[in-house]
Image (cartoon, rainbow, N blue to C red; front, side, top):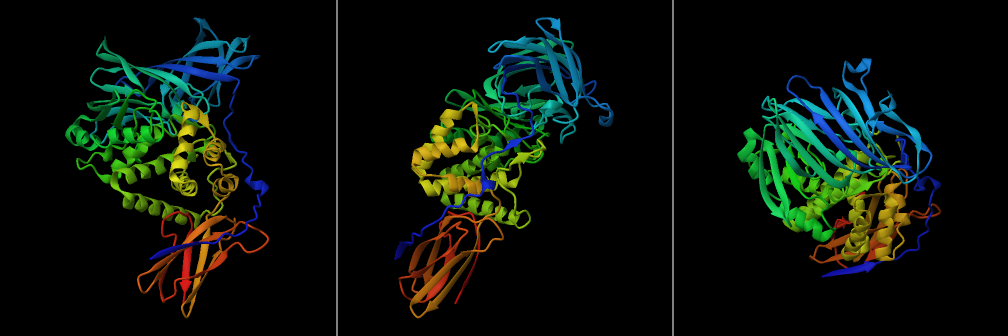
Length: 551
């Protein structure tokens, strides 16, 4: 027999000024200019590692009175040992423009004040050996390859762009390279032609507004298979030619099932193609490049290793969260990584069962617990981020996933997913912030989530619970107290009393964030009988750590 007793306690909400939802990163955003699209022409050879580039930038001037265009491009300096990009010329309608390329910024003088609403197209011609962002060199078989990995602000090493997620743009990538290679990029293939002198050109078109870290180029001797199609969208595998058989087997699953599940659960898949590609520029695991997610070359084993299947699921989840819906500030990177991590778990629940789902949740929770033993002050959304190549970390994944799980548990599965679907519908191919997510979940539920978002996103730590129980005859008294060094939380805590006769009893107790009294609660078991065990959070609903002591 299982009974459930809910103890409601009055709670006082005290919001510290430190929890104000104001934050930013160090990028010099200019919302008066909106980049519409880029056309990248990239020339690669086997003679050297120099990238010869020609980029056409289509910019719409939202505000009047501006006469410049600023782009990011890592320049050649003494400390970079000859690496970096040099700009040869910049033109507008065939006329040369003045420019300054210093401190890794390319500032172009348009020679006029651009009227509001007008679009300006400039062409930047440049060349150089990338400092970072593109890996040119041998793969694990010793074959020469060219692969990009732009996370998080490194595409500026080889492309002149507004290198920040707030300004998404469409892209075309025109790659000219030795004909012995295959090449791929974002979007769909428009042209593949031999152009003479042993060279080949491929032209890829991506008509989906995309953040710059998601731009991709891969040039290598590859084997490519169209595994299947889903809703008319080709699903491809790209691996080194030596890994053809093993790689085709490994990547044949589970992409199609994942696409179908997420479109039904969240909303439309925005791309016209999905290609999974192996890349030696992605050593850690995976990278969610738009329409062409990349994986470490050690992902190929020939046995469909479950760990790498999870990485595939994660990178496909990013096509919805991070790619289609993109954080406006880097401070909100949890809207990308937390979502991809939790939605990987949701697919695992759907595909492998609830035990697999709970196993993943518990592993994530332990990662969070371990992290906060060393860095208690860390908040999921930080007030300010200076280093734009240090924007993420384990908490964005694991704590971010747990925030979503607790929201789902609080609001109910149907209400939670309804709110996520409207959030996705509004911000698909746009940018969002944490407040936008909160608004949609509040509208779906009628709940006020300010306290929840404040405590889980904008302050550090997690609750540590001291759970004590005392048996006096057939009566059991239980107390739950918060004992963490700083930061109070308000949450429900489930406690299960398991009796020696096999019966159990579930209590829902409350902790509060009140600074003027008790922040815990007490309750009594009603079943009677000797206690065998007291289990905290038996249904895996709360991100917390705890100790249990009883007699």
